[in-house]
Length: 146
Length: 108
Image (cartoon, rainbow over all chains, first blue to last red; front, side, top):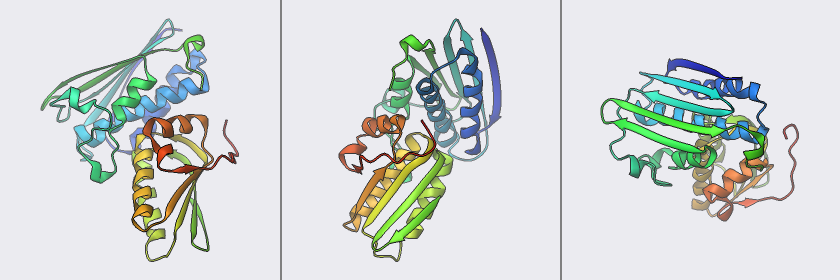
């Protein structure tokens, strides 16, 4: 079944769990394996947490928009914020790089998104916001069985 | 979150979903239990954890540092296959002993 959705919600930590729930519900009709669901949930959790923690600095202000589409078993997800933006995307995506080690951030967010999705692309402009675009084939035969 | 204290060992039974939101509360609760006690072993039991992302990894590394600073150790047990993969990606298996005994109860 082909489908699409757009969801908009406040950038508050409680909505990290909400974002995982809606993406699970969205992909469920394609009968994904448990490990595949877990990977997509982790990827969206990392993207939404980045927006809450970094784009909006845990201020509680601002909105996050999730757009998702499912076409012929290919899932595409966009997580958009209108926060501070990322000045150096390459540096931000470097494994274990974090601007907040004192807050027990690991710098693993983008690495996990890249590991668990087929593709991750980041568009960002300082002062305007960020869009993280991810895609993944949901067919069980191409799933990396744990 | 349940916990047990026996001798110099604190066991914390984590449950549900560990993300940025819930990790902040866990960090505070565990640090409060450790403070003012001569505990040398912290066991984190993940048997009832349904989800964890990198914020959970950060919380674990933070508690590892707390235990290392007092000359103690941190053990992890009850990892699901997904969490085991996350532990390896983060390199946690190199600094934290993961007990092979699997006592997962409800999931997978």
